[in-house]
Image (tube, rainbow, N blue to C red; front, side, top):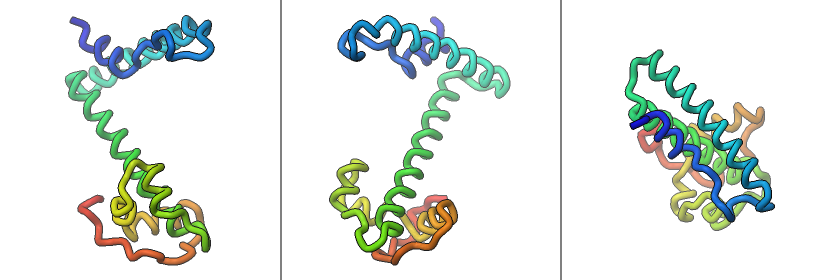
Length: 140
């Protein structure tokens, strides 16, 4: 069993027929995926050696960190779309569909903390406080 090889195969699947357009690029796409797997395996091995960590547990921890970063980015983008987009803020229904959330989920997805972060990142204040975001849901 090659634990690191298995993990990198899961993280970077090889393209299958029908996955690549045009179809004659399939071999190139597979070669790129194989190269990405090799690089990922080397990186994962180096992390495991440096941290003396189990490869599967480290891969899971890294995936969780990427998910948390994506969730944070979504909250910031939702805050931007609702609070920084002038008189014509994006509608809750539009943002809900794009983010894969419910309308009520969009309403409560971000707090004043996210609004403040976006304000700092883009260098301007919100256009208005359309909604008064609820208290933080225990997020740091």
